[in-house]
Image 1 (cartoon, rainbow, N blue to C red):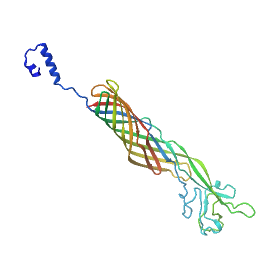
Image 2 (cartoon, rainbow, N blue to C red):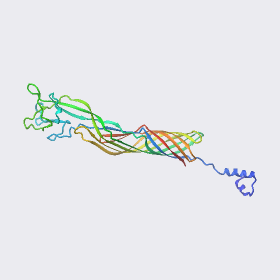
Image 3 (cartoon, rainbow, N blue to C red):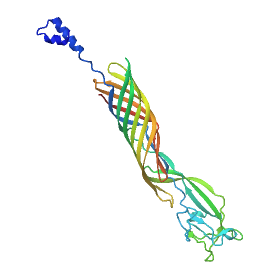
Image 4 (cartoon, rainbow, N blue to C red):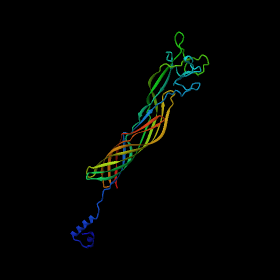
Length: 352
């Protein structure tokens, strides 16, 4: 019996009422689950690090100081150059030195150059680095126990590192001796007391000469103290896209796996200021900003629990590999390592 017929009757027996109820139910379509799912979550990053390279690197300060004639020093603590005679007979009067310690008493005058390639240090770690993520899942198909589709996600995270630890860096100290002229009989000419600096001119008379050709040099490694600060601050905007597969764990719980493309847009600022405890070495500093896009991939796994037809909770783990991001300012480099990032996510999902 049709519903219209049922409504036209003023009084209905029990059997007719039952028929009408069935007819009414047949006219109401059952609600379908939406294939669209939106999620918002907190995202905690682990295994994200910042390394600083070439920290404390410096060249020999030779060349930063000038002789009385305006020529640059060719050693950190002195100079041996060509005098106005062209170093006649292999001697020169165009020389100078800083300290009495450069005259060891063996008939030589020793000049030095010191430099360092710097060192690498890992910045203090802040675990976890906190961020947020928004996801959109589009279900494409299902059977009695599996569902599958595509997932897209946008996320944001900030990584900030401040390092002010004092450091001891390895430096190479090259010692280059010059022979002092020998005296008749025995001994050597004593150089004028330090500090002593003479120009290229041969006058006035009586200025001592030294051999212009150096003896074989030797190199030693020494530790040099360094103080300063290094600051790196990066905003990381991420995007993920890939398929997912969802497995039912019962009436309300599901387990899902996914993977695919990962992008990271990084914008950063890096600055440093360092002082080397080495005579005549100036302080070093640098600052600047930079941005770049990094491309890689990810794999992820989530466990979800459905609270209602529209709301649910989920938690999961993601592994992401997008490479290393490097920013260099005035010879020093900050390296953000996003090669083995692990993210823990906890959030809520809404179906619409």
